[in-house]
Length: 285
Image (spheres, helix red, strand yellow):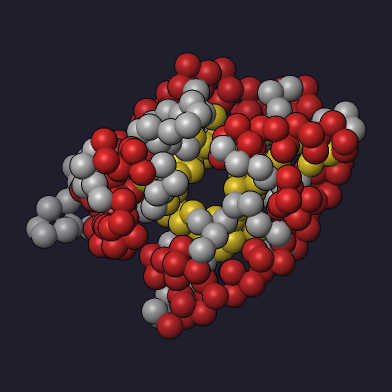
């Protein structure tokens, strides 16, 4: 379940936990073309009103933060939540004005992220960096999700991530990307990186209505016509249609799916949760 408006977070988080979702997430931007929040603030609010769901920043724009500050924020939310926080990392760049607003060159976002990740990862594992540890420390090693669908994101996940989370891609692209991620991880002497997916999804009473909703909402979010990719990359339709499509992504290696609702109909969301459980009882949505 995805939360974007901070004011709605407590109610949305409680609802998601009550109907059976395993994960509540918040994205973030400093400035953007549609409403966004700060993931650390939103998930701290979600932590206060839930007890079971995991809490994922999807994603934290790491190049906009000093590495130690991002780690401190992550550890703080982890402790507030009793060890339920997971850090999602992205490089951003689709809205250059926010980089300019905080004095960070957008052209250096990948390099800044790659330099920050080892520092952040060490702190999230309770390790010292330059002789200093986070105090208090994280409840447990905080998992790191690497977001993105480019080859750079795949290689970044192989070097420093626990989960690779692409978005707006087909099941086949998930499978191919995950192979590269784990080839890189093996080269680095690391264990396997698991697959995730941010699945923008439209649930409706009919496939036609859901598709129309998906095209319209994604146009609002990204400011461009998404009609050409909806059929391949966006699960849509009735709750049963969407659950079946998510099952295809799971078979491709996306063991954890972050469901990004393009509909605000909570009744349909509850039906989707039940349908997903019927398809894949051990899956995460």
